[in-house]
Length: 291
Ligand SMILES: Cc1ncc(COP(=O)(O)O)c(C=O)c1O
Image: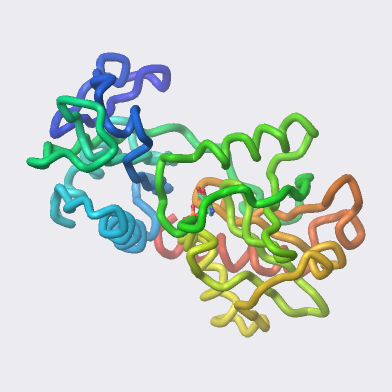
């Protein structure tokens, strides 16, 4: 195994990823008729695995796709995959599509076909939260949230997210923060937090955002450490006037945003509440993964 050709898992078999073959008639390829998870792994230990597998189940239920494996089977496959790829710090990508149907038809195949299950790993960069005192913030831009109204499903049908993220990249930003009907929802591939007057605010879970595993953990950590936190809508004006802005995701954890639409957020440096939260996050991670 090399990081260029990691060992992947396809429909019950471990194999070098370069040798994995999926039919062009796969509904994931044709329609984006598939869902996925990204699970961070620290020192060989998957982080918040039950929460990720719970969300996987909710995504499958939302698209009426029966879960192809039991929780024990998922866990056994994932530990095999991590072991085959040398353990350490990784991100696991797991995708399930509705499978390969004999003809291209939008309606589900009847009778149902076997789903396609694919998993692979990639190395991860050390996140900003690991070194709060050395962290530099990132730049973001705001864009209209052009996605559909079931953003709670973690589907691979990500064309809108791809176009939004690409527009951000073109403008030298790492993420697009999305606005719908005058309110900020989330990033193209991350959840959103702001700090105003010492209070941490994040939009409530709904069909308009992905219920992020990192988001929920950050809310939990705020509550545990008595940082005032509110789950409520964030208006565009509040976003622009925020003292701090953070983005969260499984691979980047909690990232401080220091520029919004080319203007400084707060004093243009990662804020004090971000530093406090980043320390709690790192401690939590260390305890959970026995680091
Ligand atoms: C649209 C969107 N929102 C939020 C997130 C963050 O979710 P999590 O913390 O579970 O990685 C992601 C992650 O990829 C995402 O794609």
